[in-house]
Figure 1 (cartoon, one colour):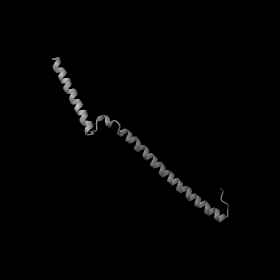
Figure 2 (tube, rainbow, N blue to C red):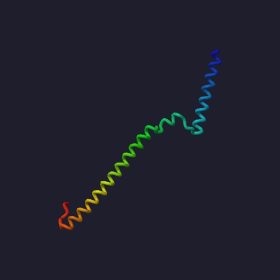
Figure 3 (tube, rainbow, N blue to C red):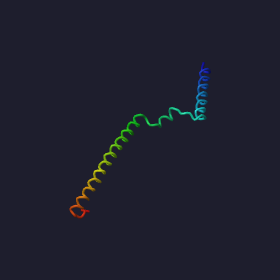
Figure 4 (tube, one colour):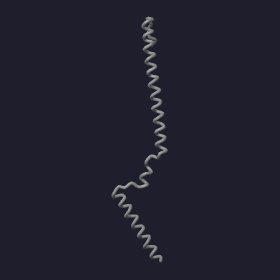
Length: 87
């Protein structure tokens, strides 16, 4: 009986080696390879940050537009009142 068990273990070990060799030979993806990919949790976090950045860019762009509008208005007022710019 112990000899049969030893033969079975040898066969299982040999099958494992052949499978590992074929995985490498055909460059198949294994569960170990997948652990380096981002998870849904990571992707959700990144997408949330991206959304926040886009919102901030929109706010900053609007503020820039408002500043430019104010600068134009101030230049017109300074021109009409013949004032020197306060720079």
